[in-house]
Length: 208
Image (cartoon, rainbow, N blue to C red; front, side, top):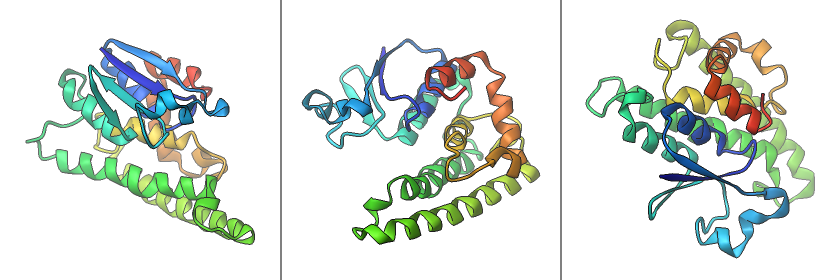
């Protein structure tokens, strides 16, 4: 049985969604970041970086949201959340998972945590402004792709990458009116939100 260590609205949302979709047996351990539980000695034994999420699979601990999603998708092929390793579509799946986690998500982090980029108090506003520009350009790229090859990132079948994009698209503070400005991203999000398991997880994360 899996155990997901999660915090509402954090990067744990994507693996939370994937676990719900595969229907696997799982326990959910909520970590209250407002109370700094992610920095407690107990949790640091699970993830020395003090970040969420973490997934326990027996004695094995996996970190990093995208990596956990890919691991779960491969472990549960019947859910069809990732092309098989020998499927030609696997390359595109890997590309989108890495693009979302290595390009889109870091732009969000620069907006929410500008102090990690500059030590100058007067510099944080500039970091945030640049992050907003990057987010706009990234979402325009994704929206164009979905317009040509959607409704999902790999075409007609949703994958774990779409659940990852759904999570990120819920973070709208630096991208006001995201769904209005990027209608194909909204179409993807709306399609996934029709699934009962998705609605349940989003509600638990305060994102319904």
